[in-house]
Length: 426
Image 1 (cartoon, rainbow, N blue to C red):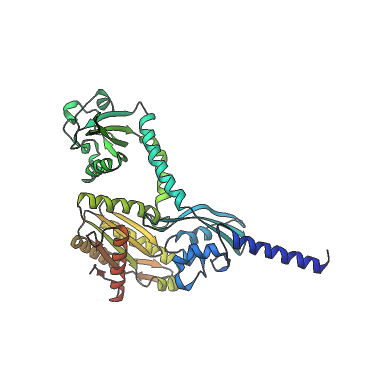
Image 2 (tube, rainbow, N blue to C red):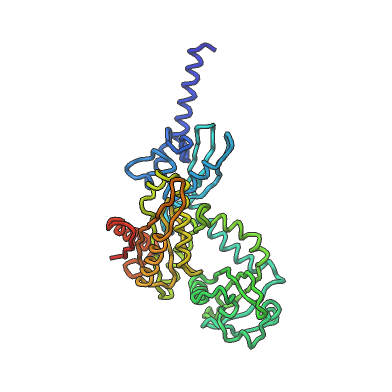
């Protein structure tokens, strides 16, 4: 082949590649190992623009930092010369159920300096999976582990009104121990949540049936992981008659799945809940609190001058700051509260059953604890401070999106007022 023919062939291949990228039904991005983008197709721009804003997509990791901060670490910890860094990694872009956007991300290391990233919108698939899991839970409650279940019924008020030997065989409780009691009777004493039973009944009335997993405890004190399926009972004429309950011991399955659950729901660096799982949990908690008329507060936390710490003391010092924030926050939280890493140096607390004034006190305690702490770095001891913004459930703030937006607005008010302080919703 002559040089001219070879050049023509290369040019044709290049044009074919550009045509493929332009017409591809998935987002394609070519970048350096640090995320600097040198080629991307129109669909990737469309998918990333809501995150990148007016500045455009110049660095893939920066564009996704607030929804997938782990990507940079996944790439930096990949030791192979080439190969897949991640496959099918899910990124939740928006938290709202009605407008939820979930992307599937694949990153391939091409050589020592180049990454190829693909992004696919799988929002519809994720919703279909959620519905399938509900159906699977229902079928599992009926057809599996038939030797480790108890069946009984509840009256219209959610109290046990029937008993059979399967209850005593599984839990040790006699008829007099359970009849007239709510589902609270079966919950483990060290995992009490006053809202759990009322919520389960309320969701069952709304959906026709509902499954929850929790820790239960037998009469002898044995603690076990359980799945409780509650379904509405109706008379022949369709009138509501109460509820049927299947209580299953799923301890063996839980032991094998706990580690997988931890990996899927936890931020790898700090141990806080990850962004995707937080949105699922928080959405359910907002709905539950509204249904039961209970207070609920969100607190946004952001490390002050975090970029400066990274620039002067190194990224390892930045990681220590994030770990310290989570550790100090947990000292002030109850077991039913949640701390999640939403992205970068931003965290969110979800305080169940907590009104605005109590949330502000908790936030102030966390702020003071973090301010009093120090971290060791390569350039010496470093002080750490955070700014916090609070928001609480109300008629004006009635959705998870509203609460997050209000808490974020309060956070930026704290930043604007000088940092290292707590601000509440106006």
